[in-house]
Amino acid sequence: MRTLGALGPRSFRRNAGRYVLTAIGIALGVGVVFGILLTNESITRALDRQLGGGDPSFVSVQPVSALGADVPASVLDKAVALPGVASAYGS
Image 1 (cartoon, one colour):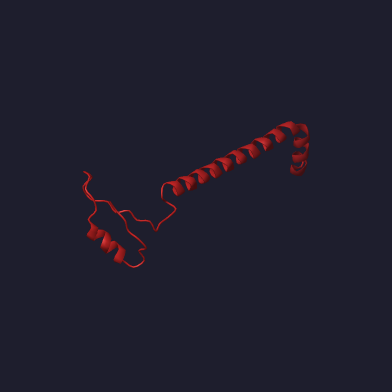
Image 2 (cartoon, rainbow, N blue to C red):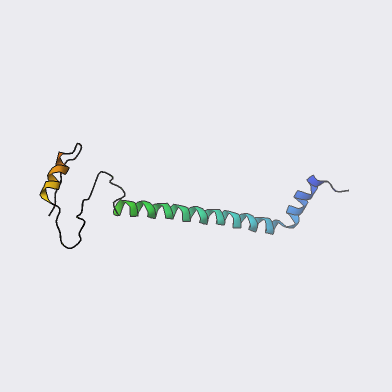
């Protein structure tokens, strides 16, 4: 009668190539998933830096009308008077 402990080594000896290919496939799969996650995180950080996600202290104020209206100078004066505001500029 065969014992369960003897089946593992015997099966490995008979099918060594199958086990090696399975291990290589698993390692490649884990590597690909890790690479995709790393690339995704890198692209996300780069886009956040370029699109303004990196500087939360910058605030942009725009007029309600998009037809060439400017922000009034009184609004800029009020913005500069707020605590923590270093500068305000507009057109």
